[in-house]
Image 1 (spheres, helix red, strand yellow):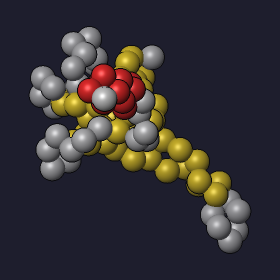
Image 2: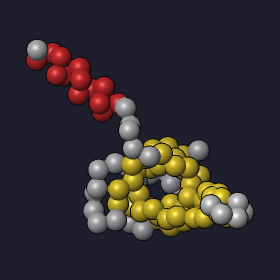
Image 3: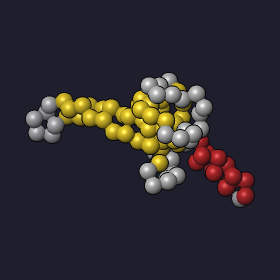
Image 4: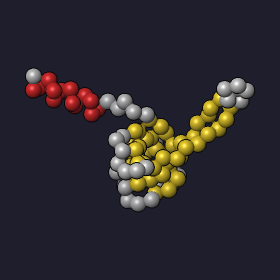
Length: 92
C-alpha cells in the first residue's frame, strides 16, 4: 500500500491540471519575478465582433536567461505571494 501512494504522488506532480498560457515578458522585477503579458481574442456575445484582450501576470522565474521581450510559456501553480500564482516553464 505504501508503494501505491508514492506512485500516485509522482504522477500528480508530473501532470499540470492548471491553466497554461504563452505570452511576452514585459518586465523583470526582481531576481525571481517577471511580469508576463498574455494576449487573446474574444468575441462579443451579442455583436460577434472580435476583441483583442490582454492580461498581465506576475510569474515566478527560476530561469536565469529570461529578459524583456522574450516569448515564454507559463503555467498555474500554488500561490507564492499575494499576486504570484503562475510560473515560467520555458523560453520559446
